[in-house]
Image 1 (cartoon, rainbow over the protein chains, first blue to last red):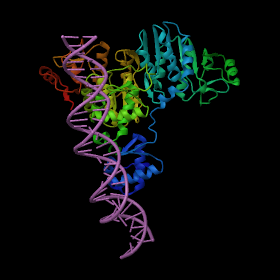
Image 2 (cartoon, each protein chain N blue to C red):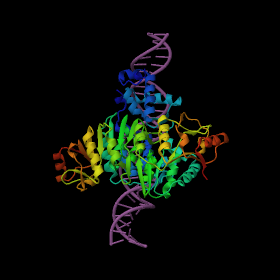
Image 3 (cartoon, rainbow over the protein chains, first blue to last red):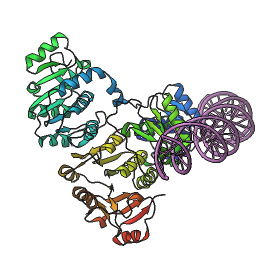
Image 4 (cartoon, chains in turn orange, red, cyan, purple):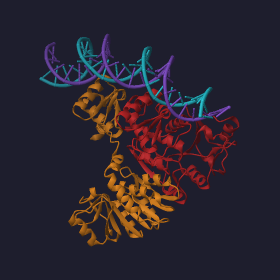
Length: 266
Length: 266
DNA sequence: GAAAAAGAATTACATAAAGCAACATTAAAC
DNA sequence: GTTTAATGTTGCTTTATGTAATTCTTTTTC
């Protein structure tokens, strides 16, 4: 079905305009850009024809024309980079509060995420820390800090989180004895529970909650009431949830009834 | 079949400005800095062109211009301190040559180091790669690339290399079957042997040489004749050593007599 | 700390490549 | 065969890139 579209036999591919369009869009989806000369060679048609194809697709709003070819509308540069900026003030406050729970010499686990990255920044005052993390950015940040030892938990990298996930990361956690863990989460549900996006993420956080001396979830207020699909088993064992302001009322109480302390950053 | 689709004619790759822009922003995101000469070498265009690209991106607010290149717009990046690349042109050439040895779909191991980082950059044309690395920068760079799967080998982070070292990294290597490995080295000794700075580094490279389908050392000319303390066991099993120019004569011959091919990048 | 040297920015212009529009040609449809 | 749609061709315009001369910066040297 799709295979026909993507077939590279130039004679076959040549005939029909819709085939070209399909292939053009497919390439755009994977590469982000297409070149006119490149396409003309591939389909064995003139550049003018390709130009007409692109013009048509551009009129339909399926791509952006540029000199020499076309690009996707949004080159989706800033998935992660963008998120970092959201709620920056709140996250910095959470970071400072979290850092206040850490003493020199401790072993600290830092989860992936922008809020935990803020915690990492706030930890720069502490000495002789051992940081244990799955996040590439946090590793890079902390390893450039003096008096800090960093352990990166390996595994397959999730391009969205820019952090290690999966079996290897899960296994690596076993090797560590951590004093305090700061964990992210997908949302804080109306009944006071932190929930997650992925099964392996939830499992990882669950284990950390279980093995760390103290485990804290760090959540900025944009997460309040947000529902994500996975519960985090043994969430009740967490020492606390650090937020930038008190969540609307059914939530805060429900959370405290479960056990973890509700800590509001200042 | 799809392979035809994914052809990487360097002429085409050069043509489109948006492709350069994408790569420039990607580099900025990982390195925090880009140099004009560096980029001109990499894309094989004039400095003037790169200057025009940077000017354009700066007007869009995507970066800050500085003398000789550009930096990230926000100084949020305490995380990504500047890493001036010495010998950037030579490394880019080595990177291109190395990338020429990689086919779409392969499993590639990339060692830590600035030369292997250049290889990573050059691999941006390839599709469906699985990258396996100990380097934080390379992980971060490659996981932002479409159609690339990244495995970060975990372990304690060496702040100099900004890469995982030690037992965990050594163990993690076992789990992988890699098609081709690109390894760094401390120096190329007068008797034609690649040597290393640390015991664990040497061991890691030795194992990789042994288990990878093909292993190549990538060394720029500043390493010629340099003596570092550790030999790399089973160095002779490497498929080749990629350099930017032929080393002075006792060295080149000695190397070839040992087995590995001497590949000079163009 | 000032002078010299090296590298980088800027300007202006030349050239090559791409876009465009009108017309010619071919292939499909009736 | 005629008609219609799609593609190819041609000449001209526009855009992108490269080159060279000049003027800053920065770095090096004494």
